[in-house]
Amino acid sequence: KVSYSNPVRQSLFTLRDCRSGDGGGGLPKATAAAEALQKIVPDVEAQGIVLSIPMPGHIDTRETIETSVKQLDQLIQDC
Image (cartoon, rainbow, N blue to C red; front, top):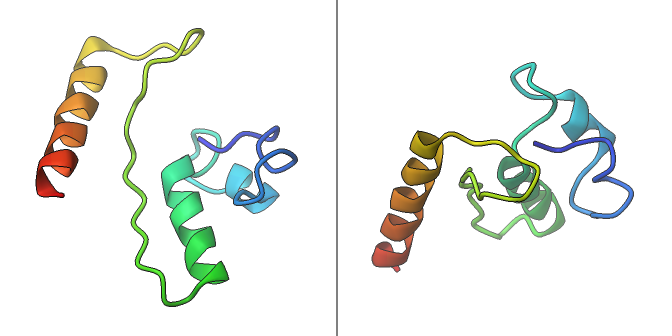
């Protein structure tokens, strides 16, 4: 999710992205980035695909990670 530290270091995110979303602390980064790209270049076809990438200090369930890996694998196969 977009956190309050993101807009100052990543130009695709705004404070509105931090405040929006499902009440869990902001929009998903992939969604916010796709929307920002479409505002910058209206002809771009961008779709934010939300995946859970394991990172130190971030807690995800095994099920969440497995779902993301399967989704990523499918995206690669579709290319």
